[in-house]
Length: 604
Image 1 (tube, helix red, strand yellow):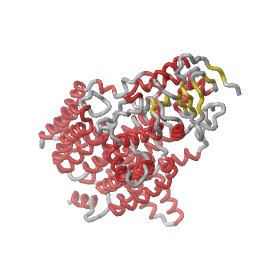
Image 2 (cartoon, one colour; image 1 turned 135 degrees about the vertical axis):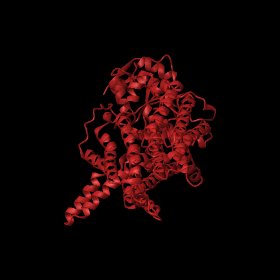
Image 3 (cartoon, rainbow, N blue to C red; image 1 turned 90 degrees about the vertical axis):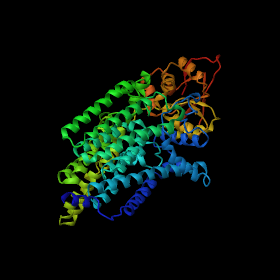
Image 4 (cartoon, rainbow, N blue to C red; image 1 turned 120 degrees about the horizontal axis):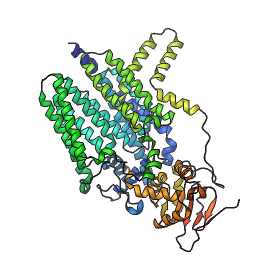
């Protein structure tokens, strides 16, 4: 009887959340559009990956094969990508609708605004649904408030953020929400489909997908009646991943890669699915027997991984060129552990998950029966997401999303206590304090924004008007006739997405040789750099003063090409070309073998 009452409280009948969800999302969407209006108007991408994603979609709509995700405007047309077309689908759909009525530039801006906001709508709906399943409608409505207040979530779902991270958060939330619903075959199938889509979009979603599956297995061990949902989840996870792999990779489905779904990973998933389905036939044996069966199934899966994909255990970046690994990969902040981040970003990333953990533990301790089971499952998945965030910061948005129900539970508990305070001023302060307490990332962001900016260590180029701090500054290179540009890695996606130029390399690990070429040239001796640049058939050398990447080249190689160009030296094989309206620097490359290699300082 107690369990039935608890379930009714968690899922009130005939309670519609959609009007509240749509209202909350509409308000959040308006605020975000206003906040990022300048970026939308100028198409200022949040990240180079968003520029590359735009180009990938436009290339596909322009006739590039569905199965070909390579970037043919980099490295002479030979630039492999590990991305999935699945993320391109909603963007392409929006563009197909918009293109007949708007210019390409306008359609790009609208599509890149609408798609991330739709992702946010999906997350807010899931957050409200998930919160109601473990709590009540009042807290579900508070979840709608907390979702757009999380900086890591908003960053991945703000206008123009069209890369895959937002959809990964949504799919992890969808699988978790289904797992906390009724333990039916239908919910297991849908959860497995969500996890398969998650890992197909990007293999970086595999750890959280494994964590969700493991929690589902442990829940079955504790409650054998959850057998059907576990079987359906495991079987569908493998079958859907296989089907999506065939559908999205086509002729390349047998490629032996480790950074995306491949035959080796699919074989391991198949073994894991068979193992999980097999152990559920243990049936009504003792808990220890079921746990032992799970351990045995896990051991079989690990053995399969060691046998079928031993190279992949080293990670997709283990084969990177040493120079590329040290100066590029180790400076990709989102892939690094939390203790290697800037303090502000570290605190903004883990602050709300900590709140969610505290709230979830408090809710668990006060719940009984079915609600306690749901809180236990959610707490286990949130804990896994939190641990993953500690080791890889890009997992932070998912952990923040999973923390929403716990944060909403804690917020209502504090608000209820604040309401009982008599004096209006104290009650108002207590209410504000409650909101601040459950939104530590906003507080941290405000504090660090108020602190004085750290003095720049950049040494300006003599005669330069201003540092090239934003990648959008490179769009002025459209003034030049279409050519191959030897440009910094971090701005090459922006260049090829917004101009007719081609470039050499972007920050994508499958192309270690091309990345090494760019880095070695900017840091190499002028004689060596010239040979490399000429061999690339580049018509222009491009530099972006003030860009973090350029400062690395200068600091690592004080006598290298870029360091000497920045100090004002000029070389006969490089002819300066003025770029109006932008601090970006460009030099025409003289391919003549008779041009001298020596440089001399420019006289002031």
